[in-house]
Image (cartoon, rainbow, N blue to C red; front, side):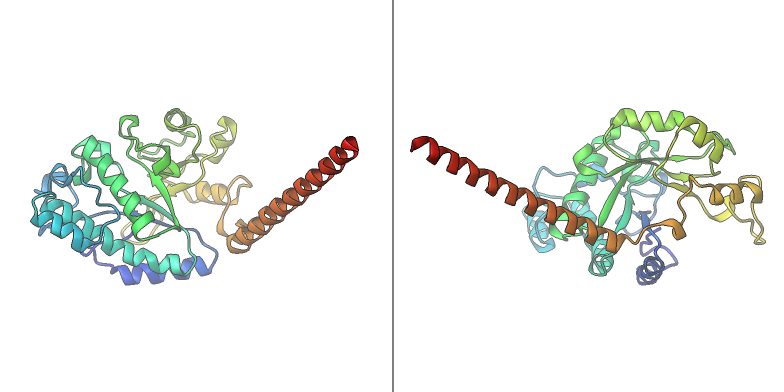
Length: 303
């Protein structure tokens, strides 16, 4: 989880943890649990007065500097809420740029569980979509964060931001220890977009690996939530959610890709790029040969 200033873990510490994990061939993922950009810095809608609807503007601000956006505020074209939102996006983008500069890809999951209405970013559907698209365009175009893999998890089809604004569709699943494959949730996500990987971004209990195999519910990744969902306060396994036998079965199954089974993504990317370049060069040469042959044939016919 990427921390904001209200949290006990600083973002510098988070970045160091991420870089260490990536150096050990781990996949880095961040959920931005965004404290509202006001004096209270609270997450929950009923604990903050911040109104995301007031931030919405028709002005095209995604690629403007913060100074230019503040000038628009002076001119009465955008609100103080709009400026506050952009400031927070810029702050977190600066931290994420550290990972970009190190060549580390990030599963980036902001604005989670929006349609539940629990958090300040989920008190209005259209305002949520505006905020997501603003963040996407500002981070990809203005901050040039080309290392982010965008994971959408608003939990409701009506809140979908569109295929062009995300890379993965996911859902957070808390269901009192239900161990089935959750194939109904997978089908729900596939009905929203048939072109995206599907993930279980959070869960209270791991689904049963055999159920996953039987129902062919091949989640791109499954995020077992930590804290008391995994361990008790005295450091023991919270077996009401996952028994030791279930965890061993899950992690040791051939269907489960753990860190030790992952490819070297850095070299894999280079290899793919080299293959694509060679393929393009080969096609270019084949095309040149074909053109040359056609010219010779046309010349012979003319003679």
